Image 1 (cartoon, rainbow, N blue to C red):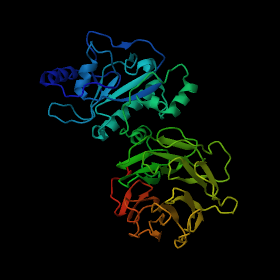
Image 2: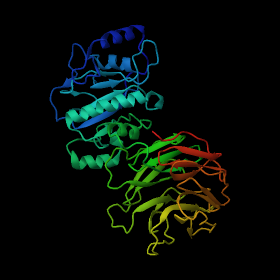
Image 3: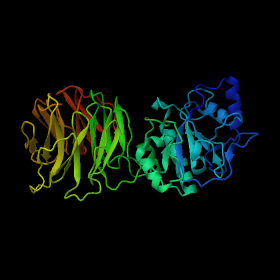
Image 4: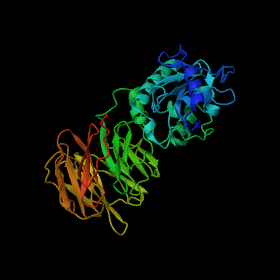
Length: 453
């Protein structure tokens, strides 16, 4: 919701401070009660509260309270959460103010108003600094309360952003579950790309945090990376843009792989049942979801055009989509220990791929054989040097094996490794991610943070 993009002046701050030093909410004890005075900015009847909507203010906490409590404005909201205490007169980070009673229907999401609770959060879609840990924690506790009040499922179909209309999967779900709601009546884009849905949903549903990370992918120039989790969560670091995730949504099967477009403008997730989830500019080209598989899908690789991908099962079976050509597979060969697939991008624009077993042995399709098998056991992931000239393998214990023009920079100590990605240069470094989300960087791969929270 776009409110006021400046701090209140001294008079405004004084008025807001006076107004908010009133009473505790009788709906939600941790919140202050500060309604509009002299006008009713809500409906008294509706369709029942079936959803919780997450907003950001595109402005500041105190000025937003003042704006929404003005009888001259046509907007209102149930709760507002402060993000940062950045001036001496500002209120505490994480403070919550209620402006509309939960029994009524605030004016915050257009034609969705009579169906949905809503909470405003201090900050801006362009700057993640406002979305602080205390804001996430306190808002998470509030959403748990609202979910209990409305008997609302705590998943990403029901705990949504004001920008949820941009998600086609949600609109498709709504068409079946709530066909009377016009999902396209909104145009807002908050809380935006920097709102950490995975962290937030883990607060609402404890137990899905660090420990479920399954892999990673690099950006186009190696200035950042994404980390994926088995629950569909995606964490972005460095210059990696967050394009969305499946975190908090009910999945038919756990996510087992991530592949980012060479262009860096999107990524896919694949689940063990072959379901595909596409984000950003990554096009959906088909999936194996709903099909009978001999073995689960354990990974994916994408073509250098960014318009196709291969899926591989633990038996080495290959499924190709988009412009990903089929060059062969190990399906039916009797293997059950396939752990990864790696693309081989040729300078003429064509593609190939390698299938890797847990002992490190590679099977090469439309690409050169550069070695493999020295690990003997425990290989979990592979990273290419960016062409058909080299690659690294990593074991779950962190041992690194390099082939072709891939430069060895030492192994990774401690913990269980689950993924590997190349750093900025063609051959000079790599990152490894562990199951707890921690990142280890070698060579020219710069550390940008980990998802170990």
